Length: 182
Image 1 (cartoon, rainbow, N blue to C red):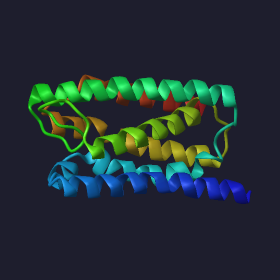
Image 2: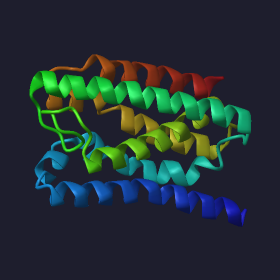
Image 3: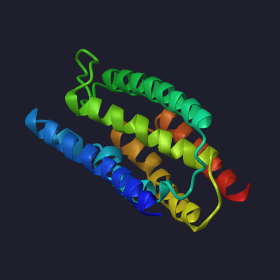
Image 4: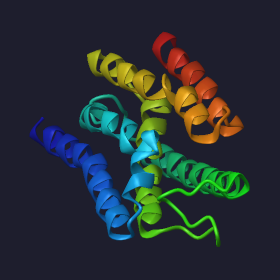
């Protein structure tokens, strides 16, 4: 049980480290205002502190499933990053995660990319390789709170609801509901 608490604490620190590094790197490049204008990373990623702490209590350890879901997380993050970069370039909307002039990631973007791969892996293992207990309900509420404002923030950032954000929202809600009833 002690190792579960230690793993939970280590995982809970990841979103904090990611946020602090993005804050520092954005401030260093004089793009802190852009970080603050991106609520999903500036605000919503804090929800993963409790989610990550309770994650270890909600999953079944299966190395084969972990490898598969790790690869899926990498692929989803790669495709999503390419989509968001193209979308921001097309909209001529600067972002702290990448340079819209050349489409290359910033240092803060690399930090966020690493965090996103790890975080999506944790979410996927929670959704597809879990057990049922009280911690599942806690983490389900946290994921719901993460998903709930996505469409609002998408419209605020892009002036319209992004197709990818809509896909994330709908897919996330459906899979979360299925996780709770199956």
